[in-house]
Length: 329
Image (cartoon, rainbow, N blue to C red; front, side, top):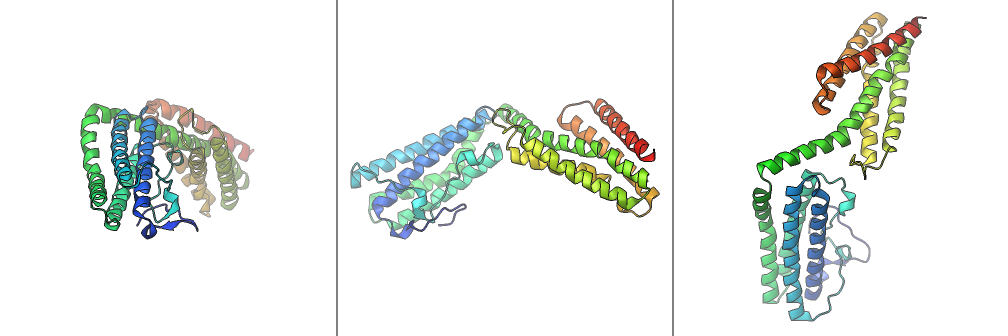
């Protein structure tokens, strides 16, 4: 059975060696796990994506109904005791990644995860149905496989019912807010720091030495050093559990890379051997960087472009002039 993220161990049993009793017990446990995952999805999404959360609440109810009919079939054939057979006890069985491992819950990632769950469960039921001999059990497993196949249609129907244009618009706004919190803000902080804070050392070194190579070395060191510092600072600022800012590691990486990129931008021109040409090119790059920062603040932070440009450019020009003054003194 194909799946992603398989968990196998040395004592796991092959699927082909399972008895019909074990297959039913495994199916019951699988449906219970899937229902709880959908409940976790609904709980995790209800604050920002209430329409989608309702979809997963409906899906949870479907899985609980599947579990109920499986238990009835098990009781009919094998009695009251249902042995504990977990997914990880069976080689090649589908594996469900715990919800806490995929936080923060992105709406697209969750929907994609649910599609994979339904596909893998359907394949399990199809294979299980071909393995059992009891006609009633085989029919039940075949019906469940067909039900999993139709879950895509169910999800579409539920989406039409719950995800009205107004709800979709609100969810899109919520998705944008999360994107701004988790990606744009740390990236913008890094870009601003890298672009502005490295101006003084780069141009101070350039005008002090009148040598492109020396300016490049100083700029490279300042950019990489600032990137590492900002990355660690952002990653350690908070774990995102209360602020909704997402995984600290991701924020730290984004912030660190953007800080380095901000400094590298006006450092690279000093690869040009001609000091005068390199400095002119670096100044042009600085102007582009400051305008880009202003545009990002206008686009994602709702800051009027002229105000953002004024704030960023004034600060950048002051640091730039300080660097030239120190380097020329």
